[in-house]
Length: 254
Image (tube, rainbow, N blue to C red; front, side, top):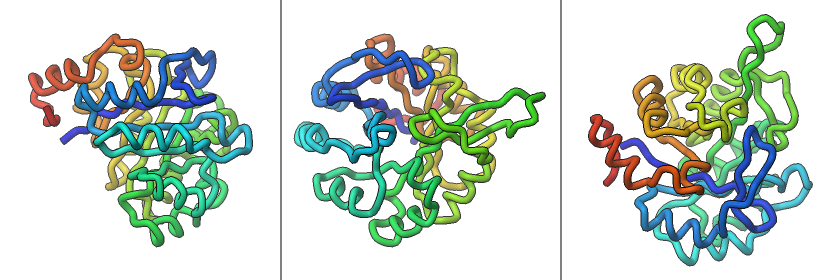
């Protein structure tokens, strides 16, 4: 089944959303949002403390505890996770998966160590990427870190393959170019990745219409579709999205 996953970017204890990782605006309270998404039929939730890494701090776990108390579906937490101890703290609260990004790029062996300690199914490697112009002389698909603010010069597809080889259980792939634009998922980037790895890939960035979800599912090999703006601001309900996909032959949990 294709999973439908709301993403909740957290800053200062609130759910926020912007465009291409900038111009953030307040969306709602994370606990309230989590409870509503459970009732709507979300398959799981992803929470990302988007300023933790750039501010050089760990996740503020108070809202993680609050969320755990009200939901009954799996949830993943990322942002500012630096080491195994940070992961351990989140798992003790009740988090099902952790998402690592910048720390994994800087220290790839962290993926292997985390998998050995906690199990492959609990370790998600989040990958933020951008497309460089074809005539730029730069990598076409490049990895970004530090909240999408720092270019690494690292090939995105090669990095995802490396993460898979180190034991990552899942890839959360976000296109900075598409993020928050509501112009559709970055099919080129997503297909480049799903064609080269076997582990589940969750597509993120750009959903604006029901058709965008359908397109990325039929054109790539994604295991799940993640979105934020259209859910947070009540433009598309999860229930309606699942009905739409079901009508078109996509296997989703109703």
